[in-house]
Length: 194
Image 1: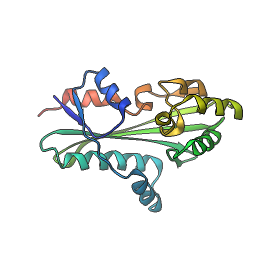
Image 2: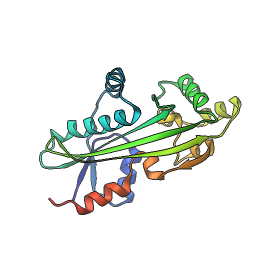
Image 3: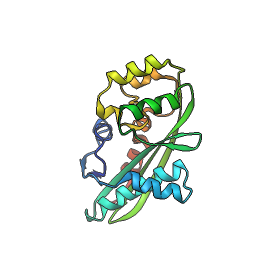
Image 4: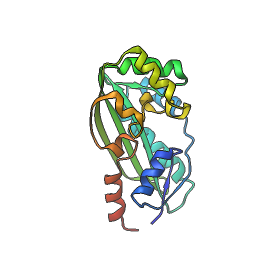
């Protein structure tokens, strides 16, 4: 069975490939910032934002892909129950790292599978991470070592790369932290009846 991934995330595609889930990529091109802003105005919490974005991405692509399973995904960093947005530049990335420095936060990963524009399954996973208390110089050096694509990742860290060095502890599934709770997705797909 083939699934369509409604995401440009190279890491999410790699996770699907690693678990031998046949997939192709059709980006949703949803304006995440606009959706997030609208949801925040309505009082949505980080988990609700993550779920809504995953569903919206999946449904948008699904409505153009008849009879195919479409997987939408979204990850949100939550600090003190507030969403930390993706940085637009290095200065913003540094501010985010300073905000997370020495603190516990949550990474919420939501996934949604749709068919013919309707949701048929969803799942949300929440991981707890605590960043070490690091010096300003350490944070600056870390940022200087990473490329712009990594910089724009949620929370400015990629747990699968050098980002792991920033943490005192990580409680949660690594694939989920990287953006895809793959074990639950695989279980659903393996039991799915066409």
